[in-house]
Every structure is written in structure tokens, then in C-alpha cells.
Length: 287
Image (cartoon, rainbow, N blue to C red; front, side, top):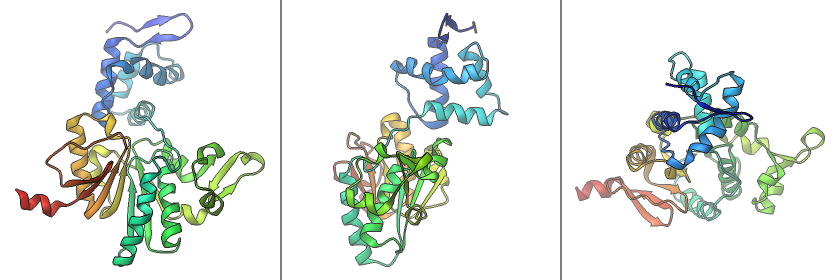
């Protein structure tokens, strides 16, 4: 393949052929179906990496990440090409529902409540759920939050549990006062999730394409919000089928408010916009 086009001040230009190679790469690696209009986005996200490696073409970088020994660089490319957008109490209606649901479950059984933030990014969603459960059930009660993400860069950030104050602007004031510590000196303008709450949340890396390998299971609630929009229909079906296996019977899957699950062969029954209940026995009886 010929070298990439270049501009005098911006370095290599991502050609259409190179863009298609990276589209195929991220689809195979993470199931992300990049729209044809995302060529400029891919170029901007990878440009800094080309400079760091002194590469003169995007094709050269594609060759590098496809060498079997370059596992670390391949993960860096996945990190750069995956999107991480979140904030505390995003789509707040889900957390209002979680409060009510947790109270009902706690009153009716003795099993620990288990919640999974399946694309947790930098951790705000998981900690938001933890605040709700701590407030509703008590911080020392038997419940646990799990957060996973394919991006290896965001997990250490989530584990650190320190955020800019602006990221926490949607947290209800009473929860803000109870579960955050305000930073001073070099941490001025930042907040930290209180350690006693942070200990209730576990973070790890996980690729949703193979999430059936997740060691944790029997979840009461799975958050998978604003993720399905990046998958094509076939990949959605594959991921959702694995998620259903990890839900308790009667457990809930929460998706983004703009997302709809159309797959008819899954044991998911829509109870409200963006909220689905897993009812495997119901689907078995219908076959």
C-alpha cells in the first residue's frame, strides 16, 4: 500500500482505505461498528500515537497493531477508538427506579443485591448506583457493585475515585455531602468518593464480546446504557444473549433512553422505556 497523504502542518492524512482497515479492526476487537462519517474522528484519535511512535502513515500503525506480539499496542488502539462519555447520575430516572427496586428486593429476600455497570468508563455510573444502595439499604448491608470496561485506561481512573468537581454537579446535594470528600491543596477543585463507599465497588477490564467469561454472575440489575448504539444488529444479539445468561431470572437490564432492543429471540420483556426484565421461563414455555 502507498504511504498516507500528508499535510505540511498536521502530519499524515488517513486515507479511505486505511480508515476501512481501522473500521474492521475495532469491529473485530470490540464489536464497535464505526459509521462511514467517522474518518476524521479516527484520524484525530490516532494522530498522537503516530507521532509518539515516529510513524509516517496510518497503514504503518495498522501493521504494527496487527503483529501478534504487539498486544499492548493493540489495546492502546482499542482505548483510543472506544468512546467514554459519562457523568454522575446520568439519566437519573434509572437511579430513582433502582432505589425503589432495591427496597423491594431487600424486603423480600436474604440474598445479596448485585449490580453490574457493564460499560463503566471512568466509574461515575457505578458509584452513582453505590450511593443509591448505600442510602437505601445501608452501607454495611449485603450488596455489591461491579464495573467493567474494555478500555484499560479508564479502569485505574475509576479505581482512584477522584473526580473534578464539575463531574459531580448532577449528584443530589444530600448524597454529595455524605459520600464525597472535597480536595485541598494539590487536589483543590476535585472530590473523592469516600473510601467506605468505594470499597463496595469492584472494577475490572472486560470485553463485552466475550462477557460470558465474566467470573461474576447472578446479577439483579445490569446497566448497559448508551452502548448498543455502537453495535450492529448481529453484535447486539450476541452481547445481549450473553448478558441474559448473567442475569438472575427476573433480573433487569437497563439501556440508554434512546436505545430499543428489537431482538425477538431473547428472554427480555420490556417493562418501561429502557428497562427490560429477564424472564427465561416465559420464553421457554412459548416455544
